[in-house]
Image 1: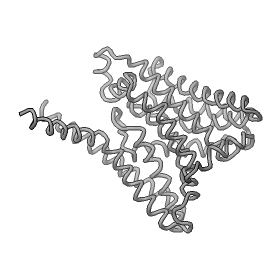
Image 2: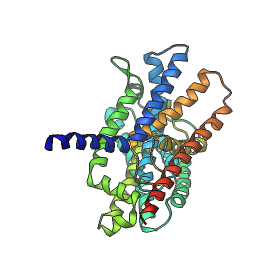
Image 3: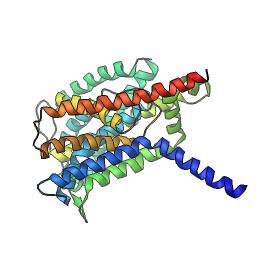
Length: 336
């Protein structure tokens, strides 16, 4: 009987794993198909330069999408991620990049800026008892105002050697930006997700009252989620400085990255109701979002169609997520 029971348990583990990562795997599959279609129709074909260019664009949104994921998992939403992203870009453009020591200090200052912005959001949400969407609308406006103080007009400087290193290729044609994103996930997301703090964040998103009654550290978990969200935005702000060699307090960029990060999270299988999903899925959702724009360019479609098409994709994704939640609640009602 023991020998027969083992395969059943093993199969159950696989079914549980597939159910847990269904959204991420689906996003990965869709991205592979879309990127293959893009490179197959690109004039230059599939080569290292095309992949690197796509990676540099995709990583920017992917970092902001991961930042959004930290908050969405808690059943909140952060409408200031784009403003923090732009603020950190402006701060980076005002730093000193002449020597290696100055560059290291500049990177640390930018990261601390994003971390402080995220921490402020968390403190207001936790101790001010305000809704995350209201809080982050207000703080986002403040962060963008500070960005304007740092950079009234586009400009600035960056360490060109460091910027080229972060946006070029490693041996074998591997995009440096993709490697950097992998390292960020390995250093920040993976330890967080496997830690007790990360489990509490998911528990808060699933059922905050139940988590509170269980004696879990809800405030600490929420604060960590918002602080890490700000840190990821800062990394994105640094990276766009490396890509553009400049800083710009652009309201259009702030709004676009905020809305696109929400779309990427949904496309990546992260539930907007909290407690479910992965930053890995959000990354593939961001890459899908970017690839859609590239496909429209390759097929020479009118750019005016892009917002319409992306809006339809987002609407369908949200509807499917809502339908799944309603179905689960109906099943629970059967046992009520």
